[in-house]
Length: 164
Image (cartoon, rainbow, N blue to C red; front, side, top):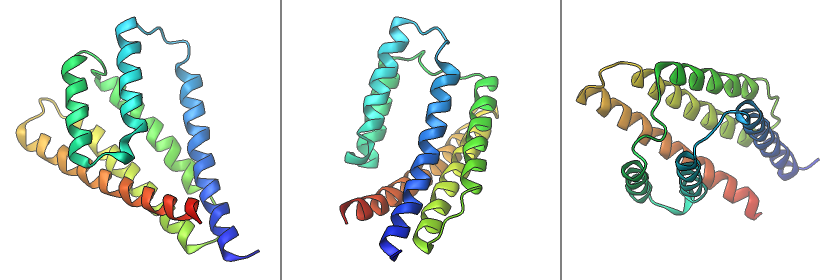
């Protein structure tokens, strides 16, 4: 099998793992009642997330903040929510760590994904440090920015191989 096919198999394995995780999350939360306002907010945030790669970091943050102003109560998380999110991130991280990839490119992509997950976990741990002081918020902002840069790099890699 040539190298391009092996790289594509590695990428497919990573994307399949993500898909399985998302499917599990959907299944886990399908019976949770959602108000009409929350459904509207969820749709708006999902639409923003689906277009994340066509926006600059600043455009994304501006749009995210606008949604936060429009839906101020949407997504307010408690410590239990943060703990649950950390557990979900740890679950997908464990699934990624079980992958046996065959190429350096696949392994590199996986390492980027794992670093992004680690940054997200750090953000949620910081969010549990109440009250959130300006110093903690600055740390959160830096972690999120670093994660966003990794996402950009991941997308560039995926685009490169999808275009081939």
